[in-house]
Image 1: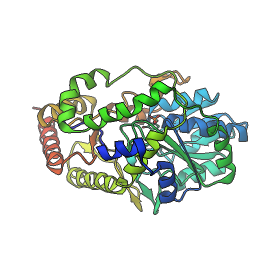
Image 2 (image 1 turned 90 degrees about the vertical axis):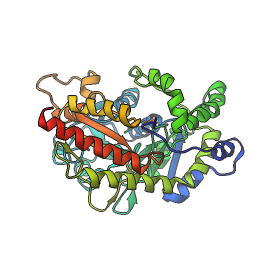
Image 3 (image 1 turned 120 degrees about the vertical axis):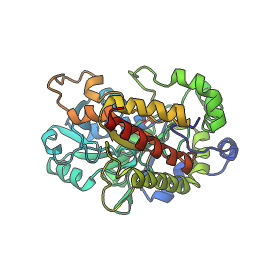
Length: 394
Ligand SMILES: Cc1ncc(COP(=O)(O)O)c(C=O)c1O
């Protein structure tokens, strides 16, 4: 079985984590050219530090997020004592609908959070224009888009501040981890003040991180994943979190990440090529829709999203691809945010129907470097056959 996520981690990287001399924050700063870069235990913590910093600079309270994105983004907004406000997404781009964003941004908006879903860059010119017209900050969620670019610049560095995640499903992983980036002295200082006060994770967690990383490296291999699948499957869809840990990044992760980052460009290129192959092969297939790719962009696909005609056909394809090809696709996220958390929105009529549609009809195909091209060819054939039977009513 091939897992839905998988960035190769080798023995060498783990040994470097234990006693190496490369440090991810240093390498990252040098490669991206960002002025301020603060590593944390997760992307959620990185976002939380940003919100706490912005709160010291403004009395505004609203944080505008897409209604279809990682539901966990609500937790740092609430923990920071701010108010989440949702905005509709586009069925053309699968990202924030910039044509309607103005409806959701007002004089109480502290920041707008464009999320580059699946690695697809958001229209940052449009987002920035609307945010600027209301004096709101732009905080890019580049958790899933490390390696993607817009107009020659890395996603995450196009707004006032950005953040990345290095959790196990991301384009580069150090098991867990996150990072805030900004080029602004004022914002860098404000985040830095909070970052310097982050506690270290407890001793036992620090010891477990290398051990868990070895487990993850094995689970990313087809044989390892096939053997571990019965255990992994039990923990796959866990309960919704109600809180999160706020800790510093560990030395092991920083050193291992420094080693991994040297191969990051190769990993991003493979994600881009796998995505381009799927795009070309599926663009003429009837019965599914692909996202529009923004002009002047490079997409390091975290996963490749296809929008199907209904939930039944999506769910049956998900099952068939796993059973017949041994490849795990995913159905992220099960519902849009307004249907998961009570944020005061009416259930009916649905205030964010496009978000509900994406949650129920998107199928995500892995693009990571461990997926071979023959496997993707098989996926394309299976999807074609399935949709043609479906249209024929068989
Ligand atoms: C779009 C997006 N934003 C934020 C996060 C949070 O990152 P982390 O899991 O590192 O806390 C995730 C996590 O999967 C994500 O997909």
